[in-house]
Length: 171
Image (cartoon, rainbow, N blue to C red):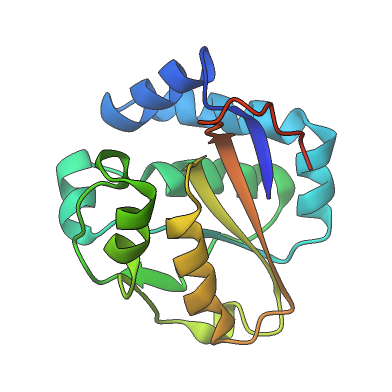
């Protein structure tokens, strides 16, 4: 898992504005910042395809966009990697931010389906999302992608929450 920052200010506020206040430009600036980091470019150089975490169609209609897709599109254009929607969200689940870690796992179980396995089969896949918190969503998306037999699965997020204050190191 590669992250640009921890989920604390200024990143936390920028992500909130990007996600909930139609800050598409902020998402693209965050992608530009991510792409300037050697650890991000290093991951992208050994990858074949980007897969943004999908929103349920209802939530995407309400929000007007998928923040993971905006971030992935910009990263893709900067790195030359294709962005594919090999996975869809089939359940309109409650927002993860409102749930405990245990509830998050149950909440996303079965929420995704792979619809274009050929886009990830035998490829080095990077799942792209805005925030890594409990890893429940990312694990479920990865579980679904694994059915298509990718070469590898990695994760790229804008920020990762550090709720225990352990100041985890960048990998």
